[in-house]
Length: 242
Image (cartoon, rainbow, N blue to C red; front, side, top):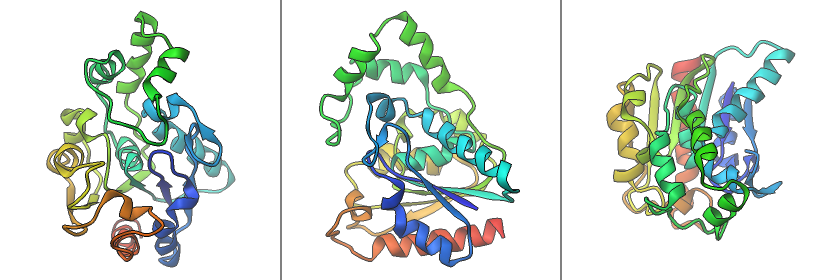
């Protein structure tokens, strides 16, 4: 089985470019909608900023499916914020102190076109006080799921918020693809921490002119890249799960 995690504000249905090749390779595929962070059910500020809840979504789904029948080896694949989600399932942990700096405004929050006024909306629901500071401790917890045996990341996000020490402890195979013209999840900020700190990681650029939105736009500059990367993901999981 391979579980697929969508990017910020997307949905499981948007990930057909990745799910399709995986199904074609014989995998059982589950593409979930992350609560509060998908355009099907609607947005909540926690869905965008409480990123550590996403790997818990996946574990919840795997628990439910495991009650139906044995899962066998599981892979996790994700795009953008889904790339972080997949990595968190094998041990990546965000640093609570960095998240706190974002919430207090000490570190600027990048613009989120899907949710204008995101930080203000979160503060309205959860005032920035000692209670919310303690709640962030959950962000640094170990959210790994031992059922996940391999990870494929596409243009992963949140790399700058993840502890290098947690990445150094990852032991399952990880493969990464990124766009050379990605300004949403730039290689240096978001991909490099995963690639350089995970000892089992390998990867390569999907192309020097590939942008972040080439993986979801209706009219991408490179219309073939998402399906090409989807095929590479299927080949990766065939090597490591079958």
